[in-house]
Structures are given as C-alpha cells and as structure tokens.
Length: 207
Image 1 (cartoon, rainbow, N blue to C red):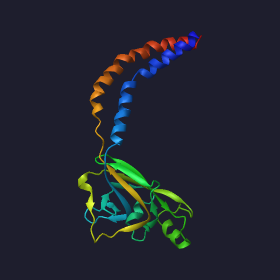
Image 2: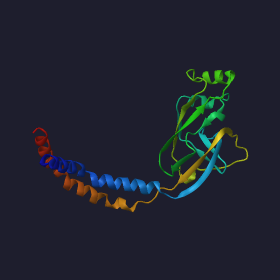
Image 3: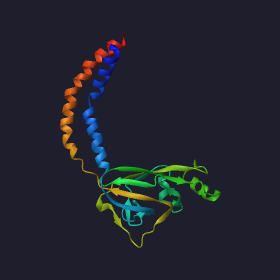
Image 4: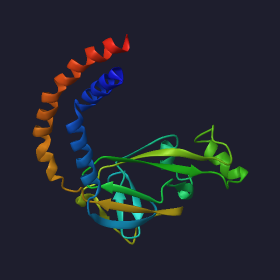
C-alpha cells in the first residue's frame, strides 16, 4: 500500500511540472478556434491569376488565393490538358482563420476515368492507377481581409465536379493570455517537486 501511495504522489508531482502552462495554452487555443465566422462560400473551381501567377479558389461570392501548391500533381496544374474537374476535398468544409498559416489537402479522383483519360494523367504521374482517389495536392493559405478578391465576369474558372464549403473566421480573442507569466511562475515553483519525488519513486520501484 505504501509503495502504491508513493508512486501516485511521485506521478502527480511529475505531471504537475508544466501543467499550469499547458492547461492555459489549451484554453487559449480553444478560444482562438471559437472566433466569429466572417464569411462562408461555396468553392466551385479554381482560377489562375494572370498578374500574380498564383492559383485562386473560385467561390460563388469571392476568389481566394492559395499561397502554395505542392504534391504529386502540382506541376500538372499549369498544363492546359490537365483536367481539374476531378480535384476534390476530403472534407465537406475547409475552415481557415485570417492572418494564420493553414494547410489543407485536395484529392484527385480517377475512379471514373476511361483509358484515354487515365493515360493522360499518367503522363504527369505514371504511378497513378485506375480507381484511386489520391492525396495529390498539399495547399497552403495565409489570408488577410485584403487578400479576398472580388468576382469578375471575365474569370476563367476551371470548375470542379464536387464543390465544397469554404469558411473564414476571425481568430477569437483570448484575454487569458495575460496569465502566461503567472502560469510559468507557478510551474517554476512546483518543478522541484518533480526532482524531489523521483528518488522516492526509483528507490521504491527497486524494492
């Protein structure tokens, strides 16, 4: 019984070190994620911005720049023969926050391709086989309010077959961040408990 008690005390002291700051960080993250929704839009395709050379998500309301596109088929994006209709999101909705870096994936579904369509894709990615829905694109975003681009009647949208929702939020204000100095101080004060408890735990484990 005494051995179990000492082990519990030692474990509690070990976990206590750094606990206050970790709990506060978790709370701040939760508050940030509960920010107000600024706009929602339905992404219907993709556009190449001629001025910047960047790709944009084409929404029903506005257009949204993508900071970077990587992945297996990223180079194929600039080829006019590459059929973008089969790009799709694994999520029904992508949520991003203004002024934060954010990443997302798009898949490329070749499940319904005939032999001719498949051979065309295989010129870009030879290892792709029929019936696959591959994670082909790694996207990066970093939007501000000024980055959102108004729709234009002359936009040449390359439509996708499966539109998805795009949700933009403002980051919630976590006033509790002001308590970081206090939480760090508490963790510094309690950290010696970890060192004091370790010898008791080690000695009792060997008995």
